[in-house]
Length: 317
Image 1 (tube, rainbow, N blue to C red):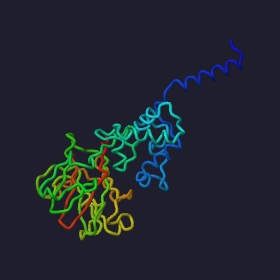
Image 2: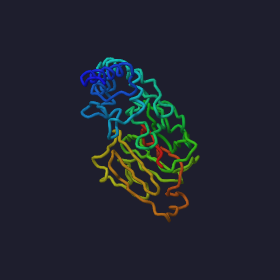
Image 3: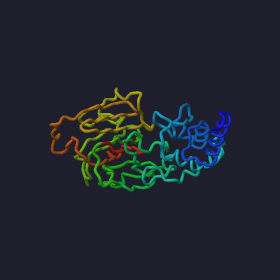
Image 4: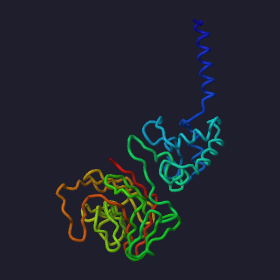
C-alpha cells in the first residue's frame, strides 16, 4: 500500500494524463464562446442576446447547462485540443460549423443562424421533438401555390405576398400535423391582411375550408386583428396595442394539444381556447374545427403586403 501523499500524487498524475489524452467531445459553456459568437453574428446577438450580447444560452437554452446538444458536441470536436479560452480558435471553430448539418433535416448550423435561430435549440429537449424549419429562405421547396401564383414571391430571403387572393400550402411532409407547436415571424405593411391556417388541406381555389385561421392584421379594416382564432376567438385592436405594429417583424406562435389551442403574438397570449368535443362545422363554407392537416399562408388582396420568415414547427405527442 502506498503512503497517502504518494497515492494522492499518483492519482492526480493519472487524472492530468487522462485530460490530455482524451479529446473534448462536448464544448463546456464558457464566456469566451458568447463573446466570440456575439462578434461573429451581431444580428443573432441583437435578436436573442441580452443588451446585444450572447451568453451560454446560445447552446444551452434549457434550465441546465449540462444539457447536451448537437451544436455543443460539434463545437467540441471542431476545437479539438485548442485552448478553450482562445477566442480566435473559438471563432474559427464557429466558422467551420456553419457548413455542418444541424439536427433539423436539410439545414446547416449556418442556415439556422442566417434564419435568425440559435443553433443549439433544434435538438430534442426533455423528450420533445426537434424543430423543423419549413422555409429555406431561397425557394418554394415544400410549398404549393394556388390560384393567383404571382401573388407569392421571395424577397430578401423572406416569403412575401402581394396580389390577388392566393394560398401557399405546406406540402413538404407526408404525415399530417395534429398536435404541434408552430412559429413564424410576420411583418405587415400598413392596412394589410393575411392569415396562417392550420389543420387545413390543399385547396386549388377559394378560402380554405378546413381547419382554423390565425389572423394576420394590425391596421386593415377587418376588426379581427392579429392573434385571433378567426371567427371563433376574435382579438381587437385594443388587445394588441403596444405589442405589435406595422412594418416591424413580430412572432406568432400556435400550439395545438388535443382540443386545446393557444396563440401568442410576441409571447402575449391572445387565444386560450378548448374546442368542445361536440363541435360542429361552422357552415358549409368553413369547418372551423380541429382534425389534422397542414399549414397555409394567405395572400388576402392586392393592397395587402405581408412578409413571413423563420417558419418552423415541431410535433407534440
